[in-house]
Image (cartoon, rainbow, N blue to C red; front, top):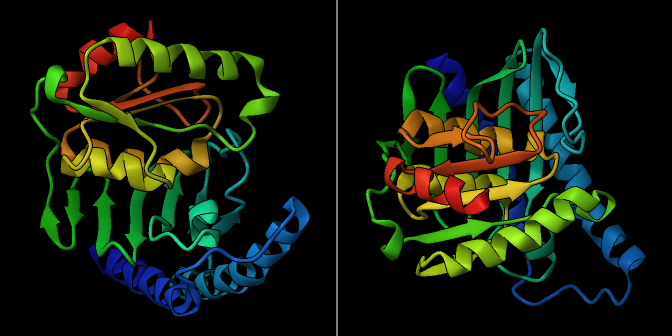
Length: 260
């Protein structure tokens, strides 16, 4: 698995380099939604094809899942779940907060994950049962108290179609802001923000709604680093869960209390 992780990291970095070469520092001139989607597809589709070719060459027997499957993750077999341009909005706006992600699932569980943000200089990796690393160095979550914590949140792409998640997103933001943390932020790609909990760059991350494929890589990295990764009530998180919390042990209990 260590040898495979090296190969996956190389494939992800190659894809990231390809995207970075085409990244513009100013926003793409897309006036409407359809135009923006077309501009993004022109970049994302070749990048996704490159990543798929490289990973298929590494493990041709592994299946391939669409990263937009929400909570639909198979519970048997080996599967790749990848996002060539995680943080599409930021990429289109000329911002550096985007990443390339690759996760290997085995019988419904993430066993290998890479989250690479080329323009931020962050390469996160993890193997189930072996630990998590940032740029090759082992990582651990922060031990900051809640009063000194900077936490993050986001919303799944289809949150507007889920009234429960939409309501919880707003209510939870108010509750956490009132709970005394230093700040709440949304720094772009979901997987990258969750991975940053593992390295202590963020103290916690939470989200409501089905978003399994986007959460899986960061969840493995954060958990292997030593963070607590649960649903909103503190129960074990699964890709089919409708609530997600990743936090260092000090902040986790307080955040779960605020969310409930």
